[in-house]
Length: 85
Image (cartoon, rainbow, N blue to C red):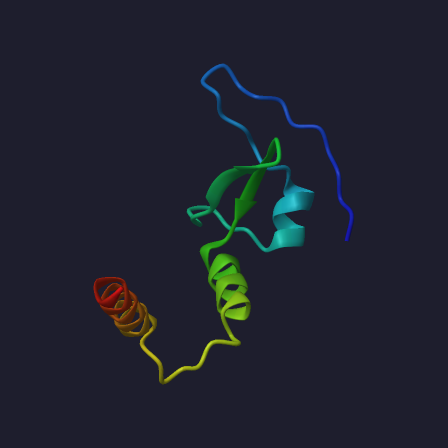
């Protein structure tokens, strides 16, 4: 989907998201958006979209493994090898 419109920044730095964009993204008054800058662009995202993206990014990781425990174990093993050398 490609929807583009011009938005003017108000005197207090506020912007209004035009109705066609709100409708296309199913945005409602009072809804929370997360804003961040990415490669010089201002990005607004719904928290649920961020959660879905992160879950997809890490879906390949095993569910029954505690990664912090694995890291600690690896570091201890490495420290033990350094002490033996």
